[in-house]
Amino acid sequence: MFYRLLIVITLTLLTVVGCNSSESGSRTQERAQTSVASDTHKADHNKATRSDGATTADVTKSCLLNVGWDPWEPYQYQERDGTVTGLDIDLFVEAAKRAGCTVRFQQGDWGTLLSALKAGQVDVLLGASITPLRKQYAYFSEPYRAETWVLYVRSEDVDQYSGKSLKKLLDSGLRIALVNGYVYGDTINAFQEDPAYERQFKGYGLAEETFNALMNRDVDGVLEDPFVGADVLRRKGWRKEIVRLPMVLHSGSVYVMFSQASVAPETVERINDAFAAMRADGTYRRILRSYGS
Image (cartoon, rainbow, N blue to C red; front, top):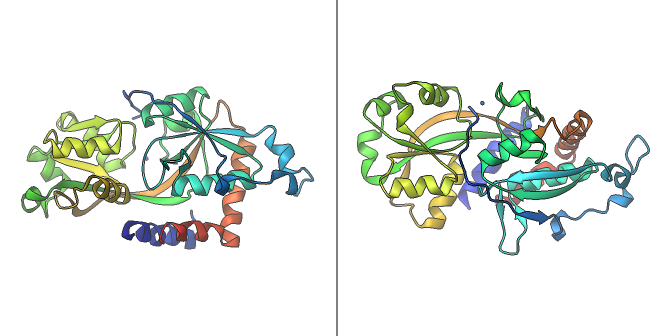
């Protein structure tokens, strides 16, 4: 599976260097709670003892983390048996287990989940970017993987769009679909906030909806993570109809976001320590490799 191999390469590079950004969302809330009861997410907390003498079972009593997630395969998705999984999910569940925390999941669209996290109704969101506004109500982990945003267009339009800057594409009238509440980097944000271009950006609740809009000619392009885009096109059978342009619009790090209203700073530090330990003992690389098989 090619795109998963690319994930491994990208995240491994981030690991080597030490693993060292407009909130909005008029999306419909979709909630579902899923217990972390699958075999791969079970842990015997009673057997582990922390350096301060407390068992992880003791810590777990006061550390239940409600993790919000939205369908974003291969990072976050749900198996047919109801198990919530994905690269982001697997990494965080392992880190939470090591930090002595239990995890439960709450599904929703990103915009609604952001509001819930701000209110303390959701404790954790994964794959998040740091913004000044979010820092007012959220803590952030150390960066745990990289992200990239690219532009997808219909195959028939490739020739007229290739080789042009984003500004030239927008000046030509290009309409772009994106997901509400996502942060696409400074360049995209500047165009979204520019009165000359803001009406050319159309928000949707889910990544799959943006590609549906492209196929229906409601928009002319889609901004998406290349691995997510590749997965949507594979599942939809649209790999010939839709292609990505050879341009990278943004690349940066992503973080775990914690609600300041419901999560103690000490818990954030324990998660950071767990990520560091996972890198040191090879668990981090093992999880990455599992998405390249």
